[in-house]
Length: 400
Image 1: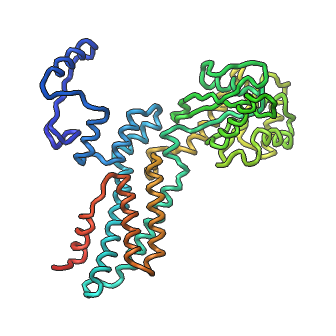
Image 2 (image 1 turned 180 degrees about the vertical axis):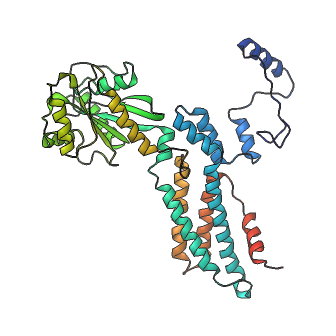
Image 3 (image 1 turned 30 degrees about the horizontal axis):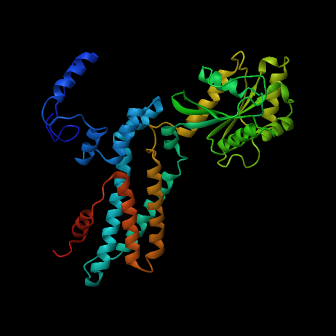
């Protein structure tokens, strides 16, 4: 593959051999005896592609996410990012900032010579305001892309002996947690990664929430409450036989599982009424009716013993995951990395300070635009001072 049209932009060769380990090993040994030849370091080909300008940083990150994608939704999001949509969005913002900065600097340097048309600063202010609104809207995405990339944290919570560990095992289809009739068996957080409807889920089983004198179990309860505060979705598990089919009783039981302030992020909750196989005839319908009257969380009757109701639970959970993560192929591309959010937040702060400085000190205002542009450049990996000079002379024809 002749450069610069290869993946790395360099002259490259590929060897297609039979896939048997002995054949591949023999070829690698033969190549290793050639002078000046060495195995590539991890990520070296992608690094060379970036250095040659074939990929931006966001495309590189998308390629890495595609390699490690475990679900269909993750694959679609990573493929869209690798194809450059996210990088193109940030690059467009960077170009708009570059133009605004060039106009401000031209006004500072040449306004006294009457070489500039009127209204330059007003147009810059309008452009910065529009950009500020776009960046703010991009940040207010509910962490959709980050959740899809790293997995949605679903926490199973409830009182002791409600069937939380049984539910974990049922959803995992393996004995991931110890199940025992002894109350307080689960002392620590047990995690398992799942693929539910194409969306990645990190499912956590927690200790039963109750007051206890046992020091070890008390630590488990503390960890359970801490995990609740960081949950994206909560599966609140109650034993159906222990609650009365009345809205007030169900609400009290749910509040005992999720006390006020437990969910700092107001994570959505699905109420799971377990042990439905032990209910008397007609009691299950009464419980569901009471939940509807009390406008409680989405609810399903479940029996971890027989498997009854698991399809309903997966349907409710899948709908919640789809609402939180969305379809990665529709709408504007989502930010997927914590570093993206950090730099975009800093960029937004600089844009806000520009409005405060523009009427006081135009030099300081220009510096804020420069900082905002630098933060965008750190996301894409492209920062160039020459672009500003190009726009100054192109748009204003200064010094012609």
